[in-house]
Length: 408
Image 1 (cartoon, one colour):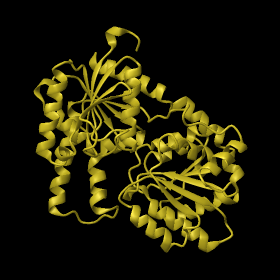
Image 2 (cartoon, one colour):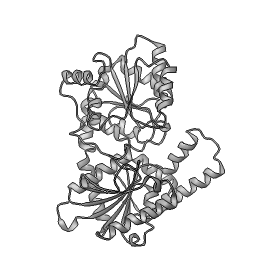
Image 3 (cartoon, rainbow, N blue to C red):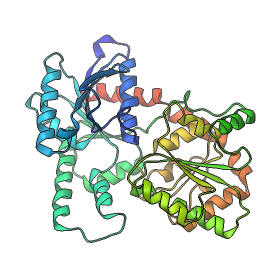
């Protein structure tokens, strides 16, 4: 958007954001905002501190970060008061043209401010907060919901609905996410717009040669000869990492001569449980947790891997890591959950596991290990899809166009 008359002052609302914290939705918020600023927009971001060590206000890549203290972020009333103060602070020097809601809680509390009532709003549906909280509390089983949790979940749904009802446009990362939304919110007036997540296709790209792959693996202290399976996930319940480790155990017990190395990167509440499970399954020789990998190092893991594995067991709205793998020319084998189905079918249906069980994961991985040339042939198609559908420049251009329509 080169026309200066269309340059906007945008208020972005998110609970956490990269580089403060790492996660799919938080990364997307940062990548979109960074490119909006590069395109001439002004972005004020209200977000919460994951730790008190971060400054209250800071400019990062042109984005104006306005951080709510860690203490205030942990209480509903204190968060509301803090969000109100941040909005007041911004409005003293800036007229806001558009409110972009990424998080339903921060979004709900911020748009209660009277001076934002008439400001056009758009909302990014990253996933259902209701579903996420239910899984966090109960797991993926259909357990009876305690009365207190029922009340909390209904209040969450009310806050989500308020943000959606106030918005002129709602963005979805996939058709799956849009259909999931419509199961709960059938009577809505906003425009529903599917725009996928993106990837930096210059940062995530295939290796130029086998020599580069070998050199990268040596630097990362990985075997050059043994096939490398990679997954990049937060270590949380719905990501299916326990099933992936059990699948490695099944493969090892079935055929100890079947060689592979599996690297899991990320941080989260299941770290200790996953470490224990690796020992229980007897796969510490071939499965390793490497923790949270620095941003500058992460593309190297994608570049030197042979296969990316996405073992999600619930609500995969898109999966930015899938786009990052594709951009790296890396085939992805994933569970038939959420948007993974529509994304992987673009390449080959053989990339989909039969279900989410450890047995299904083991069967799929064994298929790859026995016939890696089939999957190697998919590399160029993966890269082409990333270039033509998922580059951040294309994604943000579409979002900007929808911003203008929402304001117009």
